[in-house]
Length: 299
Image 1 (cartoon, helix red, strand yellow):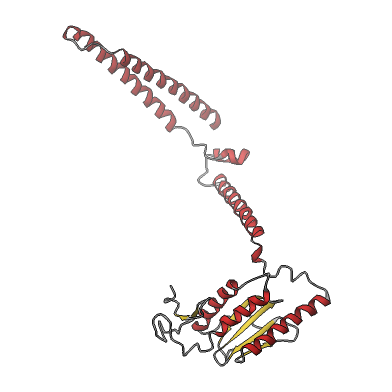
Image 2: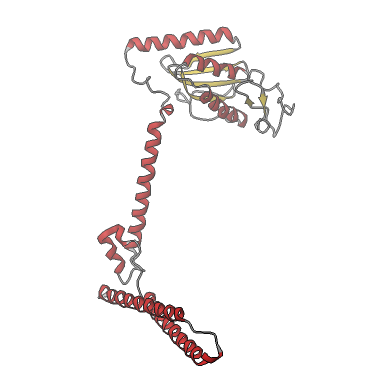
């Protein structure tokens, strides 16, 4: 019954629209003819004005009738998107059971999710540089593993000779986690895949890297804000010096940058000349000059 009544209202609204268009066209037709502006034709002028008033009154009546019909129409909304589910909106008690409204919101949310996930997949497929371990995890032969271990050990020996105040040790015999001690200043936990650095954690020299049960703790941050800042900067440096084609140069450049923290607590900021600012020493090291800066002074 509701749909039949709605169809009748639409039919009357269409007829009212046609009547409104006809009355407007008739008014413009009379205006087009006009009248002469002479004293001899005063009667014609009065007749013209009277006819124009009659036409405008008809236009106003037709517009009021069309407005009355459109006000009584029920908005269709987005029923076409849900096909037959749109008939749920014709339920006279939609305020108590808003099934259609909820279904429509779920449909829109699912459509947006599908669009965003498709775009994210396309971006990730083209961002090959995010796959830092690509070409490493697929290498499973014993000969290849031996070659990788030889390359890592060779780089560690070279670093020990170049930086005597840096100590690099493997945390566990068969792990790829290394502990780098920078004098008595700080310690760094490096997670390697071949010669590529996967993760960097900077902690105080006295903080433990093993949990109470003896397992590695490579996720927990330092308890001190100053070493949390250095961890963030070291992560940026890890990405800055990343070279997939030259992994040895990548790790050597990173260790050179890291070695600039050897006098961390005694070196002043290059810009402001102060040792402390906001209760923190200069935690930033420039990637090119290795000069120390406070985090706010480097901008």
